[in-house]
Image (cartoon, rainbow, N blue to C red):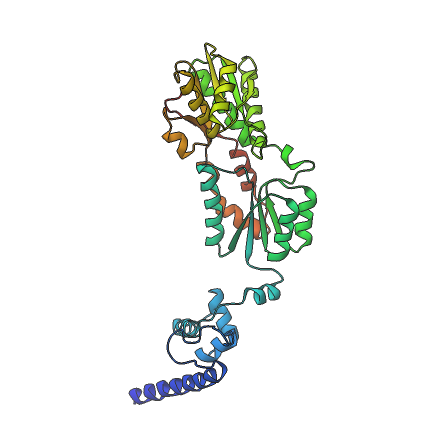
Amino acid sequence: MVDRLLERRSSALQHGKDLAHTALSSAYPGWSRRRGAGRVGAGVRRPTIRDVAKLSGVSVATVSYVLNGKESQTISEETKRRVAAAVSDLGYVRNPVGTALRRGHSNVVLVVLDPTFVGDVSERWNGAVVGALSNLGYTVVTHTLLQEAEAVKVVAALQPVGVALFAFVTVRTCEEMRAAGVRHVFGFPAAEGDPEAADRPWERAIGRAQVAHLVERGCERVRYAFPEPSSRRVVAEHRLQGVREECERRGMPQPEVFTLPLDRQQAVTALSALGRAPGSAICAADDRHGLAVLAAAADLGWRVPSDVAVIGAEDTVEGRLALPPLTTARLVDADRLKGVRVWLEAELNGHRTPLGRTIWESAASAEVVVRRST
């Protein structure tokens, strides 16, 4: 008797599916039982959540609960399998525009990045942020900040639920982002004046670490290789400030600053004009300028590090491959990466947490990777 009841139930379910298939065949020309046959193509209507509900034999609300992964609802595994099968058969994809309209915002988090963030440490930091947001279920869009007005346009177009600022923008830009409907704008503090003048404690930390290492190596005088005008000058200026702070703290002469072009012959000319100075070393604004110093020193017949010690910054692959391998200063990222997910989740839920301040303060921690150029 049980077998007969199960047969009747199975027959009824199959009859319901057949009716749904018939209805869907009318709605989707050429649709068949073949998996994925209902996928959207030319001349085919986009499947909706109602179609998924009809094919799986459940309500629209149930489909929504399953797709959103709401565990609080009592939904059987069989129902979940039926919904998943219907989604696969139809090739159903949720319409992000419709979802955004219902919610009043999208599920997107816009990550705004400073264009000066380069090097392995910055890449690991960016990867940690994007990975954490993705694991939290958000769609992540990254935008490299070049103009604040453009960033506001991106916000208006995406309607993100949150904007994570890893670049300095003005207070006005933050207000415009919130006015565009963004619920959570967080990250770097808004600048009252010129964003380029905003404090970058991590850059100053790199400059201080460079000087501290050179002093350990017996250097008594520091020369600073400063870049030609470019978007990277703001980074060099803050690193130079750190160099000056450390020299003053140690009672050393202030650094001799010279402009170093990223052209081999011009770099030779710049270095030749300095001349050799016993007990001196060159701090480069970054590894690229450190490599330029190494190239110019080789052309001049100067031995590194016996004639001149050289230290770069950012720990790039090119610096590791140089001859001699370039000693470099970089940020310590281990502490900063801890707690990133917890901090992001709290911010996007509207909760302020001390973690943000902790991460910000730990950014001002640098270390030196010692190689043969010092």
